[in-house]
Image 1 (tube, rainbow, N blue to C red):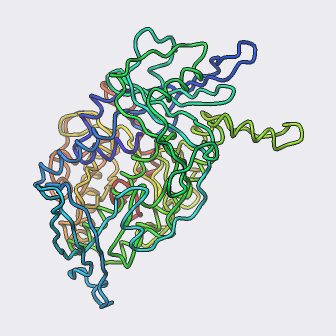
Image 2: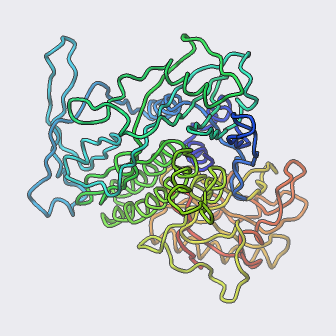
Image 3: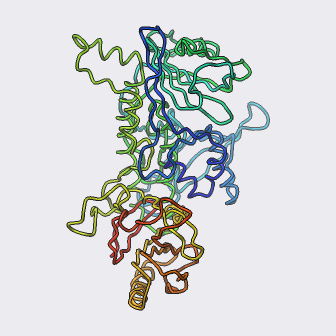
Length: 542
């Protein structure tokens, strides 16, 4: 999704995804046609319609590829991920004072390493300042902390399968995201890289499945061939052709829609991703939301470890991400109802005549929640790090979609870099290096009066940065306009940390979207200084 791509790009690892991932621009919908007893094309909609999304499409690649990008970035930073290792015991210190001391190691873990010889694992005890449980829906960390999952597990069983269809297959929208609702079943099609596709296939209710020894629904009787046979029935009158060797992966699962009662324990142990919220994978939210969880938490832990922020900063992780997870579950419930042919039929059957029942279409549900599903429209509430003020200008006009607003991501409006006149976006100037950014909207720089004002701004910024330590902040200057000559050196030294950090709101012949940034961002022509952390605006400075 667009926000995930922005995060990966801010880490410097997103280019490979953009180059190798499949780009899906449209969502298609096929519904059952009683006249033909098969499916029929119903609609095609633009998949990403958020105005501030940099990427107006879904970039699709398998999860292992995304993981390889992150691992590569870690290796370049000198960090090696240790495999074949799992925690088997965790204990928190009984000394409460340790939890408030950022230099303490109040968590003790026993780790079990897989040994070279079978049956002889080795263990080691380690102490940690922080522990992050990114260990999935059946999280060991969450269970060890006795954190309850709130919400109901639905009774729908779905299968997922990755394969490459043969050219003889006749379904016309293999390379678009598609929802397909037959009379008694439905599926969702996700195009992938290298001509592959993933299908999410509705299998019925768990009551129809046999039970295993633990009393759980038993899906062991399913197989790739069985899933493909069901899919062929859904696709009729179109055909699905593939070979057994072209099936890459498959699974079956029961949809659960739940949120953890809490995301943290004593500011030292945290859970992220599926460990703290579970939902159907059909909306493409699992990995995307998990990456955003980790991104939100990581910079906060880094600030505490560097003694840049107090331990209380860590409280904002749950305060920001848990309400979002609850919104995500609300979307997923509506989306699942709209997607499931059986659920839609039940909605009608539960009324006297079926009249007046609001049946959410899967595409409409997705687009209605696009601020959540794309990740670019999230709005965090006021907190210890986010100003409650939406605008520093009382009586200002209602903000547009690109307006700077505390608690929302800094929008990627097109700008021009002054030194080389290269077109780029405001997001491009905000890499995820752990530092906060002071965005200095300094107004015009076209004459002597403007130059004098810039000197005054330099003094104000220097006083601020010197007071809170320069290593924590980086400056980005955005001029309102400049003359024809390149005025980079006219910007005072204290405002131009390097040649890449001075931008201008100007029209570029190389970008159709440049110009008008001050107005779109809601910045007064006289200028303004704002502060952002991890690409989210957190407050107005002056």
